[in-house]
Length: 144
Image (cartoon, rainbow, N blue to C red; front, side):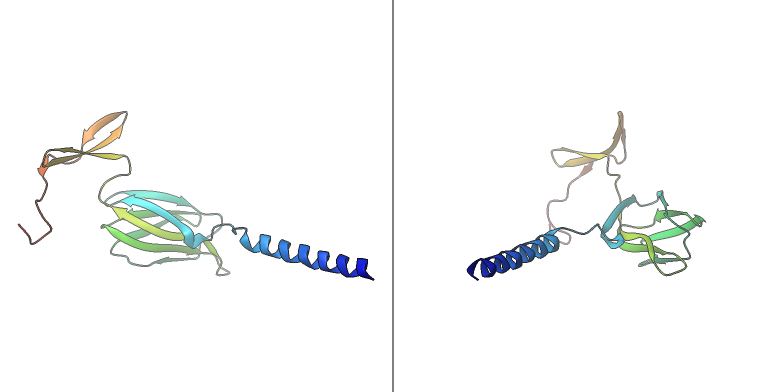
């Protein structure tokens, strides 16, 4: 009888450990967890895994979406900020989506600080100046 009790206790302990391990395993990322960066004034394409029927843009003043065909979207960064974009199929399932971060400088840009002057460069083998050297402000906006 004692062996049976120990076996049952061991069985339930293993079941509890298996459930806890399964709960701790992260699920595959949902479409909403994706973040994409686009430079203002530039565009990028998004391939879809199915035919899109509905496109939703959180704030169309930050980013705009054009449909190239039912499986390809183009996201245009309009102004600096963050918004969300989602594409749904005919059954209402999310094909893609997530946060769109629109920046004013490309991800491969470098800022060089020389004293109080800062210059931005886009670098891809060679560097091209994006902005001329500008003096950095001494304080926060509205303060000397």
